Length: 116
Image (cartoon, rainbow, N blue to C red; front, side):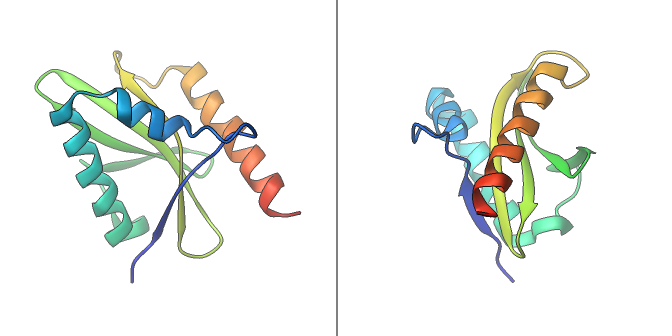
């Protein structure tokens, strides 16, 4: 069973996670794309070290390269759809609240738009 990967898009059409991926160096981008492929193949069965729940139905896709850590916050929607909401470079042990708040805002906007 394969899960569809959807990039959250803002009302102006921009896609935060795609922009985030475009800004990564080549090696980190390749590792993150591979992690997204694993997510599509495994859905909610993907576990650490690749994926971890962060609360309230939000998950983080985790990639590490040397000392750099990148994360994409995502959620599941309507069956087999994975929505990639927000990406960032992790610099602390915990997810900064502002990063989580942004992903939650994007999720609320996505769900409101989809339920129309």
